[in-house]
Image (cartoon, rainbow, N blue to C red; front, top):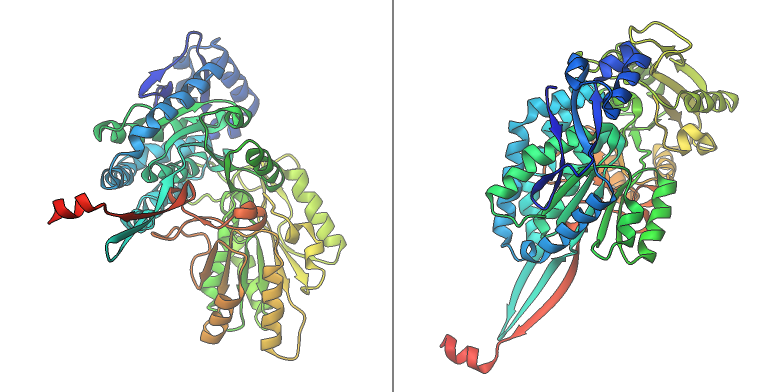
Amino acid sequence: MKFGVYPAYIGGQDITGDNPQFVHTITARSLIEDTFPSLRLKRDLDLGIVDPDAAGERAVGACVVADEGMAALALEAAANAAEEWRRVPIETRLEVGRRIGERLLEHRDPLVEILVAEGTPRDAAEGMITGIPFTSWSRETLEWCAEQLEFRRVDGEREMILRRIPDGVVCINPPQNAATVNALNGLTALIAGNTVVVRAPRGVALSCMYAMREVVAPVLEEMGAPAGTVNAFCGAPMLETWLASEHVDDVLYFGGSKKGLEFEADAIAAGKKPILELAGNDCCVVWHDADLDAAVETITQFFLNSGQICNVPNQVVAHPAIADELIERLVAATKDIRPGYPDEPGVVLTPVLGVDWFFGCLGEALAKGAKLVHGGRRLEVDGSESSTGFFVEPSIVRVEGLQGARSLSVVRDETFFPLLPIVVPEAVASDDELLEQVLDFVNSNAYGLRNSVWSSSFSTIERFLDGVTNAGNLKINDSHSGFLPFLPNQGGPGLTGGAFGEASHPMLRTTRLQAVSVLRPAADKEDAS
């Protein structure tokens, strides 16, 4: 197998357990081409019935599945390392961060290949693996966060310090749809002085374990970090185990809003800090003076992975003066978006799991007066229409008026399929009045991941900057989904991050502020003189 077998990595050692079980990665191409035989092959490989060498190119690697004992051992190892790692100077921890960022780029090609095998389209995989070092592990991000960790001021004979203390042991529960990129983002909690436990989801464990074992662990070992600073394993969800453990301080939780908010309450009741990265239902506003070419380019980001990622523009508000032209351009651009195998360049769409959900939302929208302007069909991998195809055609509906728009599920809720609503506000007396109505509409969104606006007017831009309050990220005439150094790529309030949600650098979210004043004793003054 091309990428071998990855045991659990616990306390600085590779651990397989006494009676190891394995989960194998079968390529997405194989699963799309020949679904049931490929699923049968995966089952037989996992059960040990088939020799992995007999699978040929269809199987690319495997991970050991951790049992409860191994999971408990990982928590204990992290707790044992916490005090020593916390005392490591921030300069050393920053160097660890810089090396991880550099090493990720060195391992870009194999990481991309594994992500593609797991089902991420090649272009998206390349963007992820390039973007994470650029955002989470960049020099700008690391240095800015480090500045927030400690500030000193001298007032006469008194030294005053505001510093952020690491919480301790941080557990990361990355999502199935983007496990590796989110695990790597959460792993920046290391730089603040926390130790970390990562659970790689069974369905996409290989890329996550490769990143932990081939990138992160070697850097920590080179830098002399204590064994147990990072622990990683493939396994079933461990949330209940983590909440019950005396060793756990924080849990970085990814998932849907309903279950995530329930987990927030459970975590607080258990005395743990929940850091939530939940759903997104982002809004993109296109004003009458927008650069429509640039706006169309950013809006079509919605169809990445068939809309099955969080940080894309899920709904568009189009100024009435340009709505027709914008929709016409979007339809033209959308016609070039096609299904395909993830290893093929230029492929954007991926198989959609919630096909019934898609047609339910589309039917509701049409029944309430929305107009289907493009799409609405199931497709085979070659783009042909099919009632059983794994793919859904990129689809656009036009919704007339802000009033009542949120009664439509496709506008109100996060969706995980390629159905994009374009909301066209009612005509009003002035643009100033319309702008205020649009701002109210944007802020009424129950989610808070990110919002974007496209306008060439300084006054319009300033009004959005002043008026939009419910987003962790706000993009002005810039790529809605793009990665940037220094700015966090995740986080937000509402259904996105819960009561404590905000733009999120995990390096800071996994710490707590402490105030210190030091008045030197007389002996110190004499020694100093």
